[in-house]
Length: 193
Image (cartoon, rainbow, N blue to C red; front, side, top):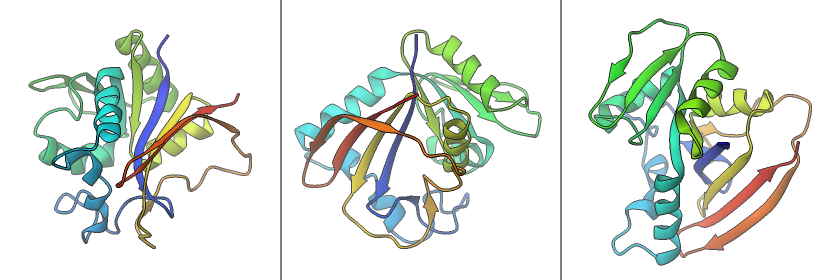
């Protein structure tokens, strides 16, 4: 069965994008949001980073993302973010949107339904959740199995935080694996349920 995974690059102080995310600035204003992904695009790429990126691509079977992430990302991606079926959690109906290497389906009936549809599409591969709000909804609903975080050694001080608004109940994690390169610490956690 597929796992639901939060796979995010984040600053040491917990930000996954800079401030004022928009279509014109999908990673937020300024350079800090863009720097969060330098580890993926470095030339030459460190072997540890290359392995983490390859595992992320190979392990992804479906994506669940929020409507805001879709709206600000589609122009940058010019396709789906991964070459797999993508499920957009939204309040506004939209016809399915086929792309070059996958498709977008729009889900109106909540995070549980979006995750269920993505699991069915992913088969044995992972369901990746994109977007802070969507990730928070999945965590609060107890739907997340793993967190794979790439912690970048910068302090952004403002922007979009991944682990905000999780409610009063804590979430226990178990460290599964850690690795590092000069650009990033790779941390893999299992959610204890």
